[in-house]
Image 1: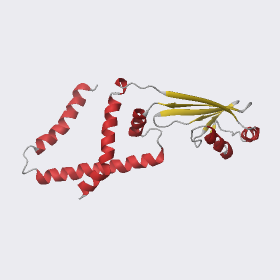
Image 2 (image 1 turned 180 degrees about the horizontal axis):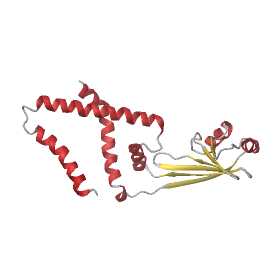
Image 3 (image 1 turned 30 degrees about the vertical axis):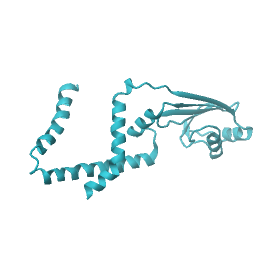
Length: 190
């Protein structure tokens, strides 16, 4: 029952991770054409004044809530990341799976410019595979998925033990499953 339940939980994840493992292994062979979108808008004077009044002492700090709301309404980014504050500019990095984004606000003029880069679905899925820029919820999913895969593998080992008397090739095949990657690692990876 544990083998069945863990396989049901991890089935789609295993398929996606296997496919993205292949695409990651052949990333140089898969052509990608990023789509870059640039946008420039003018921050309202009242918000610019509020932003200039709330310049932090540290180089990195979140945007004030009202400014963060305006940034999210003006650009397709989440403004929850810490912004990088310098003398004349606030720079908000907004990395995302399958792309990148940023917004820069000129503290003197209030001009806000941003750039959003999308590298496509394959890049998006590859970044999810690695857990890159995907947030806490995805990180929790990967942990639960990894645990389900461990349960699936361990219960599969017990099932192999249970049925191995009737199938003489069971343990030699399990041994090959260990020996082949070990030999490749020892011989070909330096």
